Image (cartoon, rainbow, N blue to C red; front, side, top):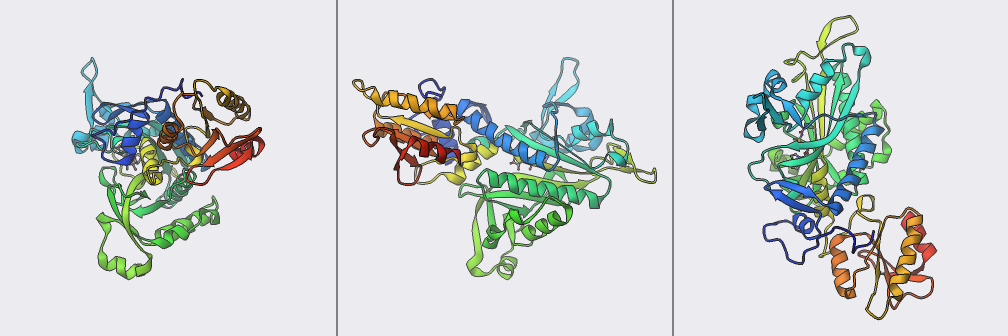
Length: 437
Ligand code: P5A
């Protein structure tokens, strides 16, 4: 893509209403555009990053055997009346009526809808376990939407639901998701800490939230640094190993302010390992057994032909929130660097261009074609402006590699820079192989 053709409305001014870095940057680089309070359009650059995140989430859900489907955004109030949550959910639920006067709502979450789908088709324990997920917009009429895409009214969520015969079996599904979440966040270049959590309006008595460290986070975190020494590589996708994984990760002290007690913290964590910081919740998993299946009469036959309520859990990742959260976790010294796995482009070419000299632009175009042939997603800055402005702009956009075509490039060698490190002069072949790894 040529920068001059890209729909990327970069603004020089600092948005006055944006309080945190990710919100400022997303507005300045034209990743999003607010449409009304807490509701955004996703412009090409922002949309590209979100889609990359979505794809990693999808691959890791598929890896543990979860099956993708798609449920609608608009739901009927009937099923929410059956579960008893229609009144409980309160003003966060956006309630609407269709032309027949039927009460509908824009789904804030899908426990009821998936239970309805499940009960109409699965009747026997023989079809269990099942893990289903979709990636879909949600709406919560947040009283104070803030921090851009981090807490908004309309947001994009991956939500998964597990169905098992017994509580014991259901915990195995819970462990699989726990593993999948850690792997997903790792691939996104994030250090996520699982923490025991309150269950709020979703319910149940077993729940973990996954929190990444960032000074601008909404939750305070008290944790043992040892949590970062654990390595997912030591666990495999089988029930025994995953149970051990959950015990290892949850055996290390890590709580948010809701559960923090100084005495406990001091007792459990050595002074030098104590970490007190802030974090952003990027995922949340729940086990609530028959909280929805019982009132909604979602029954299955067990081995003896006896009817029993299916045991369920639900598992959410804030896909749109992750775009902002990743910026918060990576922004440093006025420079943004996207993790390679989700960067909007793999590399950017920056030729020094002037009215009288188009040679560098021609070189850049040649390299552009070469890289494209290798399936490298490349952005060429063909805009006629001085290099210092170009660098400033690209510091905002945060593409991890730059090929700079100016006085230092000679023949087939070019200045190659990994953001936040020194540049080096490399041949195009070397550059290609660096970009491929
Ligand atoms: C789990 C899946 C649920 O809704 N039901 C289905 C359960 N959990 S949750 O914790 O309420 O939300 C899951 C994740 O969605 C993101 N999120 C938000 N993102 C942006 N704006 C919001 N207002 C918002 N609310 C929740 C979070 O990442 C959360 O972990």
